[in-house]
Length: 350
Image (cartoon, rainbow, N blue to C red):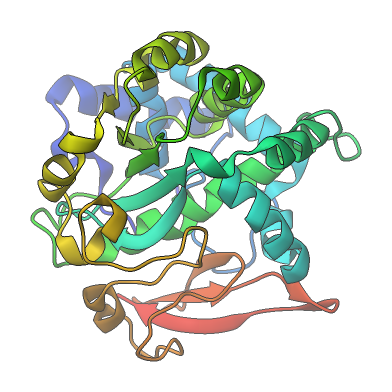
């Protein structure tokens, strides 16, 4: 089995859970699910794909039922291979990526570039951007698929987008040593979902999108959510939530905490430093929704040979991690421009 940037996955497990992880890992290895994924380049890390912490996420998603976790991982890997997700992540045209980013970032929570007090990445989502135009384009993409892919174009785009989270964001956040438990890997994110503009009609129009999002998470990205804060909820949101929670699995629903406007500042201040929290939620950070992520100062200082400059803004397009063979990991901006493949070194982390 290959090593990864993430720390050993078993550090916070009980003895029984550790035994389950060991059994699950051996089963996946014997059934050849842990072979190096097709499409990875030499030196590319397997973080977020078939590393031990990804296996642990699948196990947790099935309450440490080894057989059920195995079937789910097998299905997820088959979907990824059918859709050619790894190759797409590596070669997607940046212009196309940015066009898709505008749609996908409006459709799904995106990383703000900042972390909560425990070191987990903070993902932002504003339901007001899910207007009729975005939903129409989403529904068009969900009705067609590329070639013999087993999933729709919308689902393929969503998988590529979430790979950015599991293959890049989680490992980078795990490498940061300025958190309370630096020996524990980061494998989930905190989601701030602004639902202030959501209506019953919009929730009804979003029912297919909500179901698709739930399927995506439960099938290919289990346990990437630590907590969802539904902020600025209108007074009638209880009726909306009663409808929405029926469309998602109970495990995800249990992670949602509804916050009404007067509750938001104090609740979020308890988990996020003011400098990392957008001003509209009681923090001090000015941020434009959908903009590329800007890292915090500690993360910027942790990079060596960085090409980002003092602003700390990550480049547009996908980013992956590659071992350079001397104990350091290179962050590589990938994709293509004008037919030429991009392989730009962003920086190094240990």
